[in-house]
Image 1: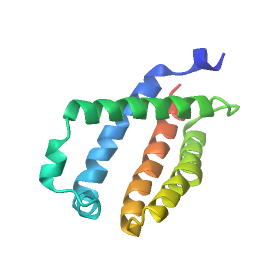
Image 2: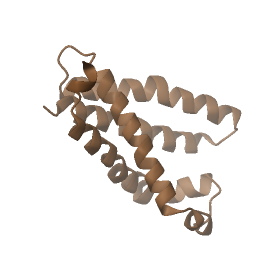
Image 3: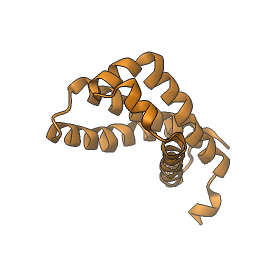
Image 4: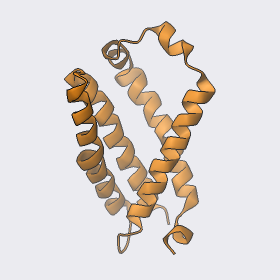
Length: 135
């Protein structure tokens, strides 16, 4: 029943929104800092296969958007506000904490954690808002 009620257009647009947000987040906002803190050179980044990287990222974002859609269907009347709130909650309570544990054991810098976890919190908030509000 839940699957049939899922707004697939909202899920797809939410998955695509990750690229728009990521272009800004890992571009002009934090791109150089992220690259330096990740110990990646321009050459390292250009060695990645674009189809594999962006295709894989889209599939993973599609799974995340699908999950967000399923979670929001548990809400009695999802709307922009509930989508926004669920997105922040999932981002903070599950993603940021999981990243934090991994980054602590991997001894990664706090600033890198803030950049990466911040992106995921923002992304899930955008996804939740789109999916919750799209009627």
